[in-house]
Amino acid sequence: MKRLVAARMDRCIGCHSCSLACARLVHKILSWEHAGIRISSSGGLTTGFQAEVCLACDPPPCAAACPTGSLKARPGGGVVRNKSLCIQCGQCVPACPVGAIAQDRAGDIYVCIHCGQCVPFCPHDCLELVEVGS
Image (cartoon, rainbow, N blue to C red; front, top):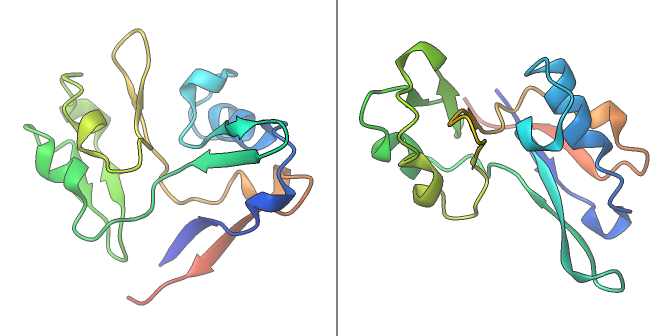
């Protein structure tokens, strides 16, 4: 099982290429708002940027907060999502300890699924898909 890690964020220039790649390739929408990874300033241009991405908690508190079972624990940490079960209640959003789950204006949920589609789009090699124990 693999997990996305923001291993070298000191190299990040805040270009949002990873977010746009996720939105376009995974969610089939071109928007920063519809991505499983988001980049934000860590306090200003001189302090750099931080990735808001799932840390692959095990057990994941967002799955525990989901009343319908739409989010379920993924082997190796993190969650898998069954979109058809989601009632857009948003209870998973505050349950995430690192703010890695986003909810858009329509109520849809976006969380990293650790697929690694964003990794090759980072021009500064900030992201890495690492193998984790089974």
